[in-house]
Amino acid sequence: MRCIRVSDPAGFDGLVNDALKASDAVYVLFFGREAPGTNKSWCSDCVIADPLVREEIGKVENSILLEVPVDRSTDQDSATNAFRKRGDIRLTRIPTLLRWGKTGPSAIRLVEGECTRAGIRRYIAQTDESSGRATPLLESEERTLTDM
Image (cartoon, rainbow, N blue to C red; front, side, top):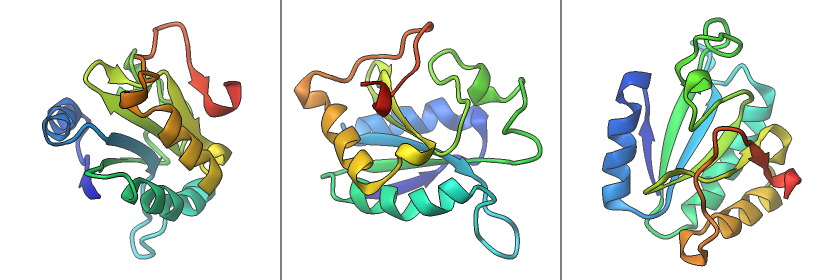
């Protein structure tokens, strides 16, 4: 698995496009940014999910994980957050795991407590593009794995 840190929201699309040229297994993880000095996320769910996401995505052949840190004070609840405003992402909770395909993010997302080992495995299987189940997120819908 290759990991790519998205340090600037303005560069997100370019990094996603580059990743899609290199792999059909592109995942995006939105998580709470690490605190200076501790290198540990301020988000307790993210601390639990991070190693599980990395381990399970790492088992997917030729996978790429784009890591998108979210700042607690400026981004999490801000109506102007770039990823909250984007119609194809509409980030509302973290951690959020999305599989990204040629047509955009999967209609299914994994959020917060769903990021368990079993949940991540099911998510990988359900969003495998070769199964034909990955579909773009419609403006009016947000589905999580527990909705399925």
